Amino acid sequence: MRRPIFLFFLIILLAIAAVFFTYPKFSQPFDWLSKKLPWKLGLDLVGGTHLIYEIDMSQVAGVDRDSVIAGLRDVIEKRVNLFGVAEPSIVTAKEGDSYRLIVELAGIKDVNEAVGQIGSTPLLEFYETATVGTSTQFIPTTLTGRYLKGAQIDFDQTTGSPQIALQFNDEGAKIFEDITARNVGKSLCVSIDRQIGDNDCATVQEKISGGRAQITGRFTPEEAKRIVSRFNAGALPAPINLISQQLVGASLGQESLKKAAYAGFIGTLAVMVFMVIYYRLHGIFASLALGIYIALTLAIFKLFSVTMSLSGIAGFILSIGMAVDANILIFERTKEEVKKGMVKISAIEEGFRRAWPSIRDSNVSTIITSLILYFFTTSFVKGFALTLLIGVLISMFSAITITRTLMRVFVKK
Image (cartoon, rainbow, N blue to C red; front, side, top):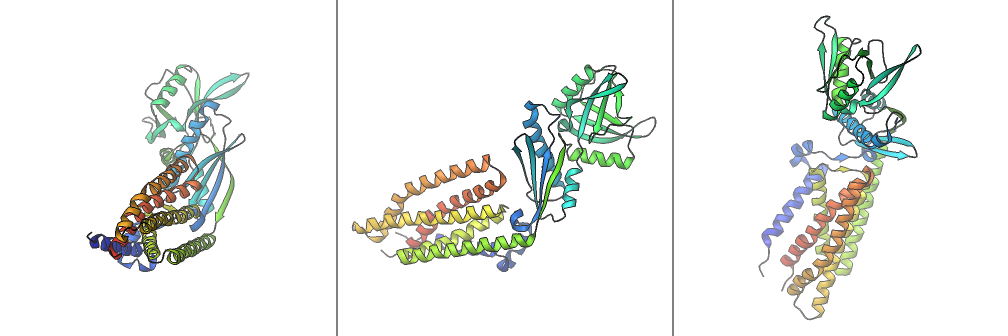
């Protein structure tokens, strides 16, 4: 059998490049790439801001609450992305009858800035009116900012005063048409952040189709520009109230990172020592393959900008154990073939062939579990699931390709 020398040297070169790319002290040859693709660390490692908002659902019908929450999350995520936070975590939760919005902004140390940026997105609502005695009763409609497609500043051709022109999406246009149709001859009011002034109501002359509306009468040009930019960043479909804020210090995150890295190093070293003692030469191959696996996996994490958190590091460390497990299956099968009298190089090939179904089935079950965790859980568990998924996929390559290549090159017939 020809020894795959070329594949062996290719794997070694890839491993060396991965080490230089991932480890900062060795990254000078890849400095230009490291600046474009820096490590992305989660809130628990780099520090940042943790905010909890309560969502006011008092004016939202029960059947619409899921869509309102989804729209609110999308709007806040769009708003956060505009002020440059990499990989923000924005999740919703329900506690009893209370709906919560949890926002984690890694790297943002100014809590007031974060609160101001998120809270500056306005709440847009339309109200019908009804007269009770001498007072006017405002009745909320289903038309809110979640149906807004875009906004732009306009000016009245007669007075020159600024106006805000709104364009709703198809669903919002239909709702607006229905509202104006049933309010012909009556007043329709618009509010921003639930503030209704004297000039915020207008009499509907006729049914309005096409989904276009205007807000007039109370803006300076600067205010109009600011509101338009906020609307285009996303108008909130429901009001939110800040109930908790926390600043996670960078020093605490760095300490957590050091402890996680230390635990991973000690665990990996212990596994390598065990493999060398128990399997001797084969253990050396497994340890070398494990080191290459770690370098390649970390390089892929960095290359594809996977956000690393403590849970993500835990998933990666677990995948290291699974990578070794595959080697153990291979070596045990190989030992069985050697005991049967088969020559070593043939026993190795047979060992790989017999171990593959077990390796495949166990890894596929882990991959399915990781996918379920990633798509049906919150961000904390998602980080664990993602790194475990990537690690398992690479471990299959490591066990079947890297270990096999090493043994083919160095084991004599």
